[in-house]
Image (cartoon, rainbow, N blue to C red; front, side, top):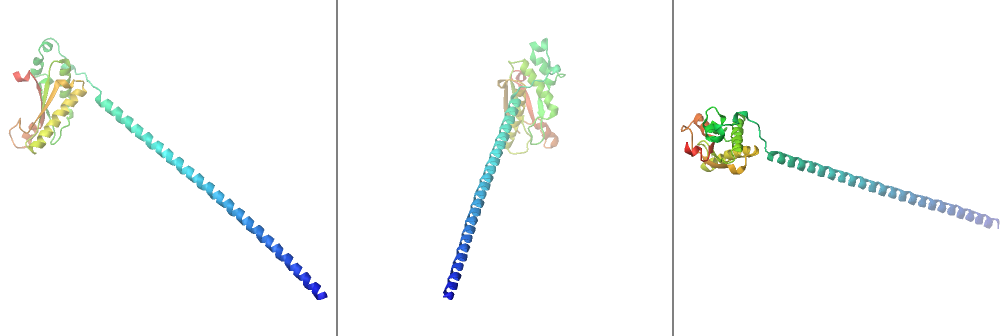
Length: 229
């Protein structure tokens, strides 16, 4: 009988220990799930914050690019407006009174006047107006402004080197560069014509650098005045 009681007590004790262990393990599993859930929520929050920062940075970058583009467009518009603005420089030596006003050709024929010079020379394969000829272009531009009834023809020329087609195109660019400079001074475009002779109208007949330098030029011709000379 005693043995039966002892066995029963041992069984009850074992059952109690087993129940306690199961409870402990259950609590541990629940706590582990809670921790895992908290970590998942935290990771989701961090990822959301990261995506928000990336979106904000992208928006800021987009705004910076748009602002830079806007500034470049504004600068381009201002540069274009400035280029189109007429700029007339005062040239005291082209002011005319008396006979010169009544007879413009007298000023054009006066050897002491800058208007008597009619040719603008260029470097090889170039059509930009060199600084030494800018004063001459300005003098003729102001002369046209003072005589709205006069018309000018600018004739572009080249040396003999290069093909016919290339020289005709280069001569045209040379004539057009003078015309553009004068229109920027305020001369109406309708007063100026341009034409290219390429290498077909040389001033010097030689075939060396000295002759070529003479032939790389734009000639200024006053329609109706120079034809009578």
